[in-house]
Length: 459
Image 1 (cartoon, rainbow, N blue to C red):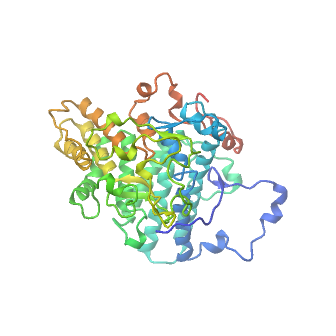
Image 2 (cartoon, one colour):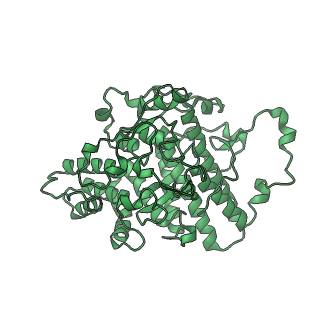
Image 3 (cartoon, helix red, strand yellow):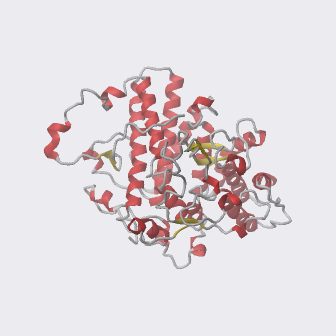
């Protein structure tokens, strides 16, 4: 699906950024030669265009184009930023746990997520009043809810309590926002994804590949349950997906050497990815690819020794020099233009590892847990695990945590896994626990009327 940079509408925690009240008479004017919200979202074509803008929001440097790689990987132990002076040190400060609420990467990511939410809210607000086929309308609603849920999932993982904005707000309304608890945010995510599962198809025609599916919504829903340690719900949610993956018709585990770096648009392993036009990151920027465009100062540092020598994932994340692209995202060039720049959000291998983890947490020794884990390891040409090699629930748990690091390396999930699984004190001894989440950007606190309770403890 082609996603273009259109309909960009900045926000303050979900509301429009409009300053200078003396300019109000100018803001009231409606352009005579361009669309406004009231003239654009009036029919199916406009609603579909608005939905494209929701997907487009995920592509930006604020989110999966760049900053989530910093917040989800450089923060962890797979990538190192080697230049404390580059970019005024804002990226390196995240690496070394010294970031402040003035960090512009945090500010851009906060606004980027709320931009996606704002656009989704517009679609969800206007859809009921537009005359069109119910099936098509439901699919649009399901996709907008999926994108909103994904955005809130990232927000609460990054900041904990965040404003829960579910309607299109005016500036004055946005300035009255307060932070909802993480539990409240998770419940809304669950509500959105549950509805999305019921409205979305299991697959799309090739021309529409890249849109969210019911499989993608179910997988993300299960991930939310995993973060809440509701393991029984993870199992029941993922069981149909595991069956579909084993069947190999629509979904399947596929060797990473086939999927990466250039097969993500067609791989059955990819359930949902942020897609870009052929031309790489930012849609048409030659040689601007994953991790290379993070100030060109980082190195891939995941130890090769933690992989088995036969593991086909090993070379894809081999140690790089400063600014070099890892093999996993090193797309070849055709006619001086990269042929793939997609970024995976949910893969079949991730689903099977979540399934195995949850089954083990429910009860050790489940044969389906070993089957799911070994499906991923066999796919990677690594040796299988058995009850003879993983003799306890704790040993199986440790194996799963390691397998997630090996399988999902550089996919912006490592830091969140470290926090979720309680490994932060071990991997980063001496780092204060409050740094498990980031400081709320000061610019967002400045924009609200009641600033009480807005900053996270410790910052």
